Image (cartoon, rainbow, N blue to C red; front, side, top):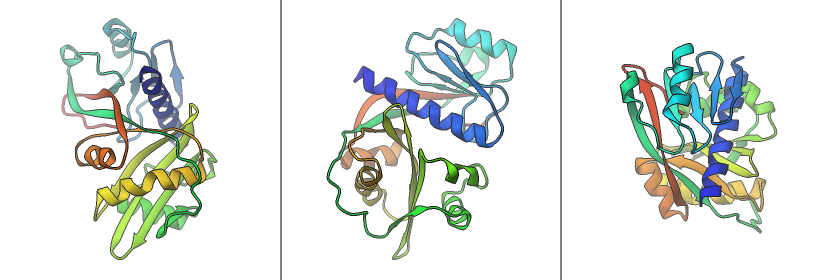
Length: 230
């Protein structure tokens, strides 16, 4: 599963980079670290560790030279508390095997293709204008929305690193039903590809009930009194 964790990390880095790009925020990748050149959008990290060989010295050197308020420790290896960071949360990378031969798009779900649809999605998700309309122009990114019988649910899929990342999953009714639908929806648009992402709490429990497996831990750190994740 080490290779699958690496794929999940890279997929997540690509997704965070796309979001930052829509905000005009450039990013760079080094041997062990991906980082933005200025403050990332709310809920997204300024730095992501991209290798399990990263060291405290690698991170400390960047913190000294730029304003970094949020760090995703992709392999849960670092203790950043001596540098005025506190752990915001821990989570688990998750994986679902490829699914083939999905004959129809799940009932009640739709792809978000217009600015108005995206406004409905972001309103239900509560992210405001963080996820911008420019994302609808990216062929590797798809938003999905369900509005049926009082349920509003959705998630995002992004193609990258030869896998499909699932993120921002939400439902106002039943997360179990949401996660049981996700792999079929993704497989219809991206057949034969592994699915990856990360979850915690109720979202993680729902994913595991629906056939996903955990493949490794991660941590998100923020400077004291800051709030960020991604």
